[in-house]
Every structure is written in C-alpha cells, then in structure tokens.
Length: 76
Image 1: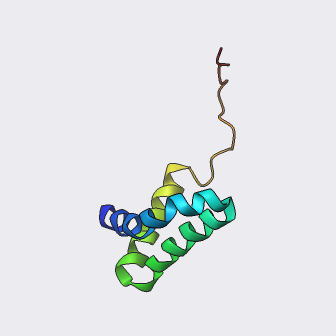
Image 2 (image 1 turned 120 degrees about the horizontal axis):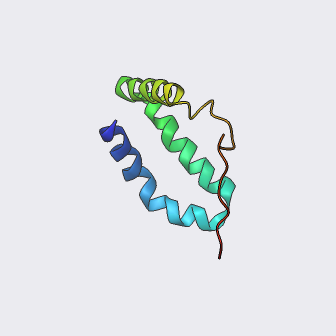
C-alpha cells in the first residue's frame, strides 16, 4: 500500500497545485486519472482491491454523512 501511494504521489505532485488553481473538475480529473493508471498492472489492481476491502470494512464507504453523536459548536 505504501508503494502504491508513493507511485501515485510521484505522478500527481507536479500537477496538483496547478490543477487545483484551475477548477475542482480539473483537480478531480487528475486524481481519477492517476488512480486509473493503477489498473494497468497486476500489482496496482491488487492494491486497489485491498483498498476497497479496507474502506468497506472500516465503514467509511457506508458511514452516515453526519456523525451519530452531537458535534459541539465552536466559539470563535
């Protein structure tokens, strides 16, 4: 998983700031393209399968959008 993250960061880092300045759509396009490149290799596909399993088991894919507990207001 760490090697996958490193590969993704090497590809995305040079583009990230520039795309973020353009638009959200441009930024998301870069992020999706980089993740999609992982599908080209068996190792990348394996890592993506593991990521999906971990996120599913952690509940982050199915968790409610709002926390089930009261969120205290912050005074500012």
